[in-house]
Length: 150
Image 1 (cartoon, rainbow, N blue to C red):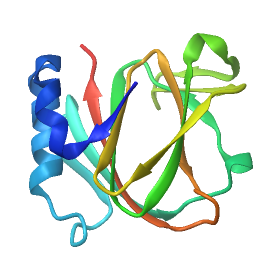
Image 2: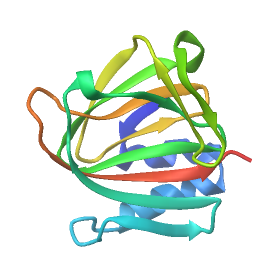
Image 3: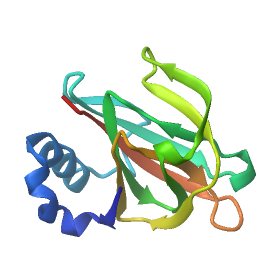
């Protein structure tokens, strides 16, 4: 897992061209005016999911992990708590579904706060619990860029 400010994205250039594409899209786009939905940056290899929602209490959160894609989760507006745990430290509650590229899990992990301008990268070995409130629920604009791992 990586947690950082978008202004530091150049530090991660060694992660490859697809990361550059993701970070460039995040840096140049005004998400205040972009409608929620899917935006292809490089077909199914790199695409963005623009989301607007109200964060939820931690008790309603679900641990998830992916295999085909890693997530670059960028908070464009608002404040959100994100859970992180090594996938192997959790118990599978719903086996991996290839068509949705998701496995659901249960257990304990750590939580960080992502404010506007911050991003988190979750690799296939990283389970995560997104969309959580920091105290009381609030409105968030978040962009999840899905980057194919192979």
